[in-house]
Image (cartoon, rainbow, N blue to C red):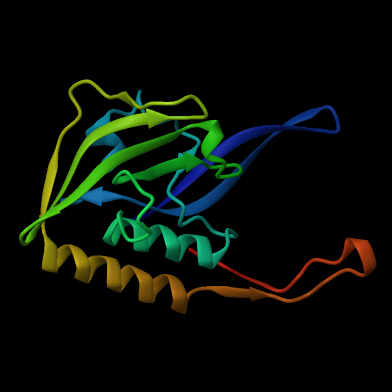
Length: 172
């Protein structure tokens, strides 16, 4: 994982401004995954679920999915790798991959684009990756520790109907 940024434009009081967010980006052998899959396939405003200011619990759940996509018994083995950098809504479209474990190897294959419509639009010519399961699990565990250690608690604020609950968020 490497630190990355994502940007998007917003219209605020009739002025176009650019917002930027930090996130931990996926790399394989030191090369960003989006470059290996194809930068034309992964929109530049998409990021991993390990984005600053997003809920820590959601980021940890994503790491759990990467470790074992069948853990909940509901998954088809596909895990979202890149989501909308503005809101993370899967209906905005996600780049996903099929993750399988066989013996001591974890395989990533069948990269595809998913949104609210049924099915997956597979990416032509996308690479496949195989990882030693032990090393793969060690990387995910180290990442889990890093994200937890660098998380930030946002205290309760506001009052009555403007009140926001306490939450713990990711800080990249």
